[in-house]
Length: 123
Image 1 (tube, rainbow, N blue to C red):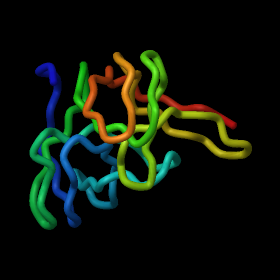
Image 2: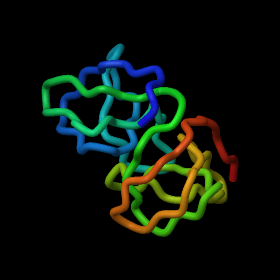
Image 3: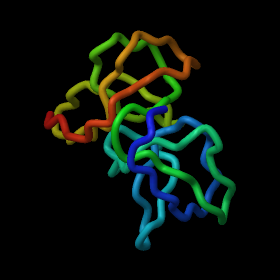
């Protein structure tokens, strides 16, 4: 992880390390992302977070994230059901949230570098 903008946020549920984070309800509250259509906020650091506690969320520059499938360098990334990074692909009639761009190739379970660059793919 490169030192970028990191914000400590409240979480009601446990957050695994290196997972993609989504906005959740009240101000400054987040949760582990669970779908490509979630409102994505950033990537959890190497510590993750306990339920009812805080999680440090990286919002800029290069962060480490865990892969949920096969990733190629340059792939735009979104979340799978477990908050892991997967290649973002257009889905008919849906808006897919993108959180980052893979900097290196990876396979499921790898922790790899991704440049945080939020955006959307309209299907």
